[in-house]
Length: 62
Image 1 (spheres, one colour):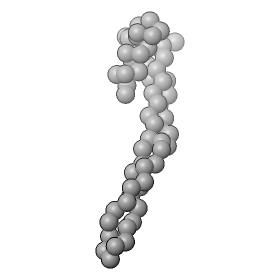
Image 2 (tube, helix red, strand yellow; image 1 turned 180 degrees about the vertical axis):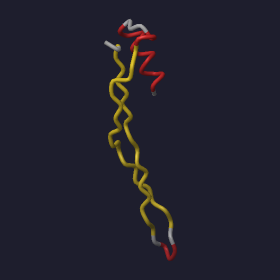
Image 3 (cartoon, one colour; image 1 turned 45 degrees about the vertical axis):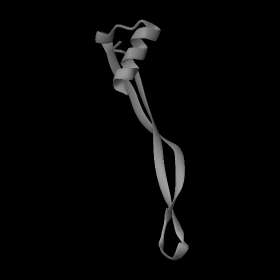
Image 4 (spheres, rainbow, N blue to C red; image 1 turned 120 degrees about the horizontal axis):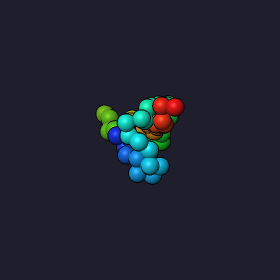
């Protein structure tokens, strides 16, 4: 994720890679995938697969 943020800053904004620093990093909750898991006697239980959004903000060291 960090390499992608650096590449985006270099290609989209023309930033100098040597002067970039991590400004902020945060993780937000993403969508939850709900699946069924077969159990005994024809029953089922729910499997919750959590996902997340990772955000990395890079900026110049100034």
